[in-house]
Length: 441
Image 1 (cartoon, rainbow, N blue to C red):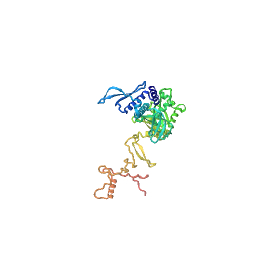
Image 2: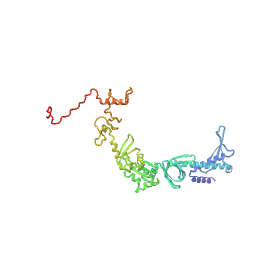
Image 3: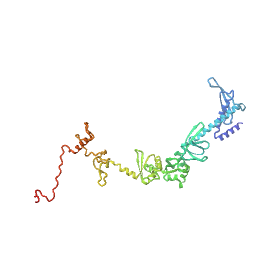
Image 4: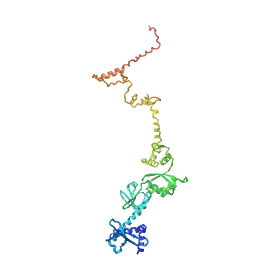
């Protein structure tokens, strides 16, 4: 009987994928629970199973008033007829519960250390909230936020996903996977490129916009191995496998460089960069490109520039050669800001004439005085204190506007006190006349 029991234990353990010792522990717990359901059972009792013979025993002890066991250990093992229907049902329920707990624990331990790994599953169910992937013994949860936009996987189709988190719940392990994580790109290349799996080629950085475009920077630890060529493969076979798994997402592979300007220039491929200027104080990389390469460097809706900034970790400011020339022409504004506006006699328009010395006289209203108020102050009357007289200031004795205007005209025509009077020059005499000559008869 014991040999048959041990054979059944080993067969059941192999079927459940657990060890015989674990299964015997579950049997002992079930037997103990079944015994305590019997009438007249001891309160303090425990069950044991011999690992060699498979013999099952239940041992009990008496308890004192304080709940401490005392006295000899008693063998209270029930036989099959003594258990009864209720105890047998309890034995079955506890046994199945313990097996489920052991199975959940084993599944959790199997995937707990695999965060950051890639798994292949079969799509079981898809709705607006999440997608379920069957990984074999467990199911993985693919939330809507971790799915690629506009990607509609079909049921019963295979899908590779990246393990983001493994949670331990009462119903078993919950595995959360992602299709948008940048780590998915690295794991897919590790599967397709042996040099990456061996550590010869490394993926230094990765920037991705799921469903549209991805940029990766690769580095080779062996001078004889081209990192870009190793990832691309013969006729693009290796990278094509990754693109197919990502449903046609474009992938740019650029070589990594420790020289930051060179790395930024390569990150903007396929655009051709003329010059890169690094501003460490602002964390900005100023990129100069030819005029015909400006739109290519920026990319559709700025996608190429965004991915290059994420790949390098620097803010990328792209300018064309024409834009750079215009900015440099305005950098030395103080050198040409001094001068005055003069009227071009040919066109009648005001032209700015720089001056080597003196303050800048910028005429914004065209009156030539440089104050921008639209009033010419050259002929303004001067008061006793040397200030311009305002015709609008009228005495408080009720004089009218006409009187104020007359006063302003009088001040304007009168010469300043102490000024010399201007004497008109005498007109020259006509030729042929001599002073004191007699008049003709």
